[in-house]
Structures are given as structure tokens and as C-alpha cells.
Amino acid sequence: MLANLLNRAYAAAVIVGAPLLALSPSAAAGNGGCETGTLVGVYSYSYTGFSISANHAQIPFAVAGLGSYDGQGHVTGASTSTTIGGKQAKARAVPYTGTYTVTPDCRVLERDTDVTGAVYNYSEYTGPNGTSLTFVETDANIVVTGTETRD
Image 1 (cartoon, rainbow, N blue to C red):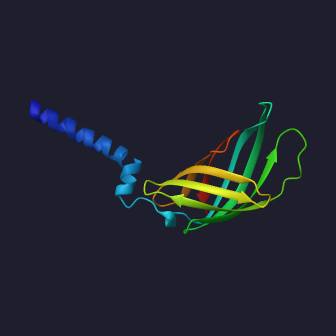
Image 2 (image 1 turned 135 degrees about the horizontal axis):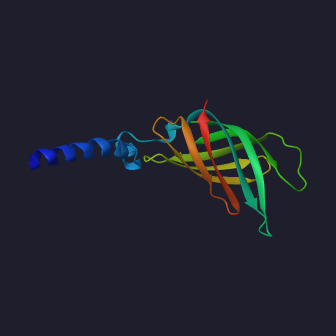
Image 3 (image 1 turned 180 degrees about the horizontal axis):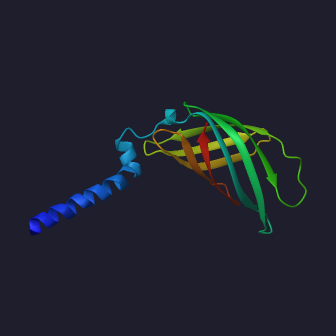
């Protein structure tokens, strides 16, 4: 009877634990994982966040855009942003280009430069199918997180 109970407990642990293991980054790597070619196509995104000014004020902003990943480590796109408060230029689409790397455990590092020369760095995650990205901007004095979805 005790052996039967232990076998059931083990089976339950396997059934419950297996899906969780399948979601881990190391499991993704073991199942073919990700590579630079995982990200290919046009992704749309929108996000809100804020920047921190020199006097520590939080300046909220919103961004929307499209990025096209070529599967070889290059991205091109355009985004439109708007800022609340202060003087602001008219919102317009600003083109950018960038590079990205994808590790086998599906982590992505991206660095973009827009036509004004501003540089943006992101730490991102994707899945082996590459249909979406979640990201955090890693630049100083910026608080941003968002999601991109392949169209």
C-alpha cells in the first residue's frame, strides 16, 4: 500500500512538474532553443514608461512602432513617441536601425540607434517560435518595459 501511494505521489510530481520544466530557459535550449534566426519578420509594439530628469522628476512618455528583424542580427524600424509636460516637438515617426543577438536560452540583447543619434539598449526574451518579445530598456534614468508581437 505504501509503495502504491509513493508511486502515485511520484506520478503526480512528474505530471505537475513537467510543464514547469518545459518553460525553463535551460529546457528551451535542450529542445533546440533559440538562435538569431528565431527573430524574423515585422513586430509591432507599444509601451509607456518614464525618464528621470537631472532634478529627479519623472517624465512620462508613450511609444508605438514597428521593427523588422531580418533573422541575421539586424533590425530596422520607426517609432512615434509623445511626452507629457514641458515643451515638446510634434510627435513624428523616427526611423532607427539596430543589431541584436539571441542566445540558445532565448535571451536577446538589442541596441538601436535612431536618426537623431540617440542610442537605446534592451534586454529581451523570446520563445523558440519567436512570435513575441518581452523587453526592458537598460539605459540609465529610463524605466520602460513592454512587449512586441510579430504581425
